[in-house]
Length: 432
Image (cartoon, rainbow, N blue to C red; front, side, top):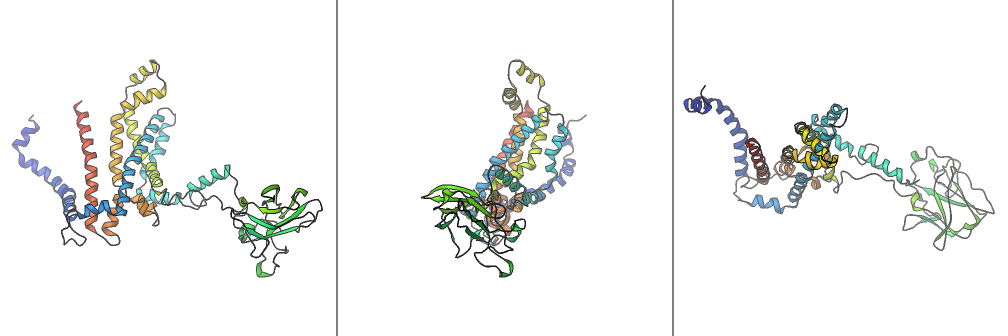
C-alpha cells in the first residue's frame, strides 16, 4: 500500500480538490473576518479616515472600556479556577457515592440550558424582592433566624403629636410620666394591609402603682376619627418595645400587648418614655446582587453553575484512567485520603486540569449573553466585559466600528497565547 506522502506527490490535484471546500470555508469564515477586523481597526468611526493605532489607545484610555478590560481579567482568573476546582471535587465525589450517575446528571444538566435562558433564570434568582428572588429569600431567611426583625418599620409619630424623632431613629416622649396617668402615644403611616390581622386598640387602664399607656395607629378611614384619641375602628400596634429613660439610662422596659396597651413598674415614674429604634428599622431585604458592587461575582456564580458540570465530566474521564495501583500504594505507605488526593491524584490529573482550565479561559473571553441579560441597565457598565463592549461600541449608541474592531483584535491577541500554550502541551503529550 502506498504511503500518504506518495499519494500526495502522485496526485496533488486530488488533494487540492478535497481540501478546497474546507479551505474556502476557512477563508470566508475565519481568515477574511480577521483580516477585515484588523484593517477596520485602523480607521475612524466612518471608515474613511486612517487613524492608525488611535483606536487601540482608546481601549486603555476610555474609562468604560478599561472597566470592561478589568472585569475580563477577573473573569479569566476567577471563573475557570472556581469551575475547575468544583469539577475536580465533584469528580472525586462521584467515585465515593452510590448515586454517582444521578449526581453527574444533576450537575451536568445546566449545560443543556442556553446562556440566554440561564441569564433569564439568574436574573429572577437575583431579584431584590425576597418574595421573588430566590437568593434574597435564602439570605433573609438566614438573617431573620439569627436576628429579630422590626415590629412596625413604617410607623411614624403623628405630626404635632407628643413623640419626636431622635437621631438614632427612636421616638421620644419629651414630657415625664407619672403612675396613675395613662399615656397615649399615637403613630401613623402604617399601611392598612399590615394592620389586617391587628386587634382593635383599647384605652389604657389607670393604675396608681404603674405607668400605663397605649400605642396605636391613629387613623380612621374617611377622616372621621379624632386626632390623639383612640377611636372605635383604630388598630393596636403590638410588640413595640417601650423604654423608661432617666438621665440617659433605661430604668424599665416592656412591650405593648395585642391591644396596644403597656404597663411599666413604679420605677418608671418621673422618667421619659422612648420607643426603641429597633421597632422601626427597615427590615433586612437581602443583598443587592444586581447592584454595582456585587454584580460581577454574581454573574460569575451563574457561569460556574453552568460549566462546573462540563469540568466534572472531563476530569472524571481523566480520573478513570488514573492507575489504582498508585493510589493503593500511597495508602499502604501510610498516606491519608487528603494526602493521596493532594500529592497523587491532583498531579496525575494535571494534564486534564490544564485542558479544562485553558478551555474555560478561552470560553470566558467570549462571555456575552450572561452579562447582557443579567446585569440591569443601572449596573451594566460595572459588569461590562470586552465581548459585550465590542457589541456596544460597534452597534450601540454612538456606534464606532473602528473601536469595536480594535477590541475584537485585542481579544484575538488575548486568545492566541492561550492557544499556543495548549498546542505545545498537546504536542508534548503526543511525543510521550
